Length: 308
Image (cartoon, rainbow, N blue to C red; front, side, top):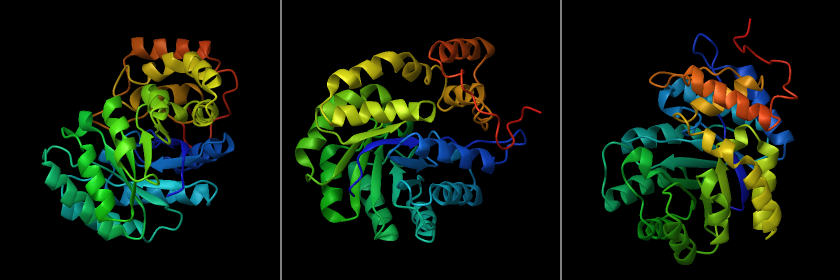
């Protein structure tokens, strides 16, 4: 997998009735690509994949892949705590033109051992081959950590397991991955606030939440760091660190959808059990977005933005 840089874990816009807003999603994809983002991740955590049924999930992946039209790589999120269900669902992705890789998180709730995670991801890799697989380690949401030794085993056992999105929040763990994995294996930070530190120890990029709101700026920051232009990278991070933090004032993606709605790019609708941020948080987000200049050039609404 020869992919580096900044990818956006893109939101899934919803209409007021809760259905996927296809027009808004296509518009977001086009804006992301026009802004210079390096790749897109559809139906990840930020895309509220856990609340989409199978038909909606496939539809959302198809929309992103079709709208991207080969201009940037597209990763399709596919996660389940039942290995049998994961394998069945993931096999469907091979039929979608324009999907370049599969992103899959640790099995949640079950709390499997390292051997259980190894067997789970190996079954996924076999099911989707030759599509590349990106492992997604996010113990804060799943309850289990994917240890570096297990990642190394997986890389050795399946040639199409070629990357990892690391959201453990542990820089020493990311450094261990860099030092023990084959050189061609790609490591992406899964946390905006750890991106520069991760690249500093050898990671290859970032899969970002904030890039939903500021794709050009996050892309420029990551490319600067990868090119050892740390002064520029740190300056961009310094300017937008409050936004990066604000995106987690409430459960992701509630704050980022609120900001996008203030920018006129989609509604702030999320699906239960998530709910929009309270009024006080929304006011703080609007004030911050205004201070950062995100509201100055809001486009005319596209799709059903729930504004009529």
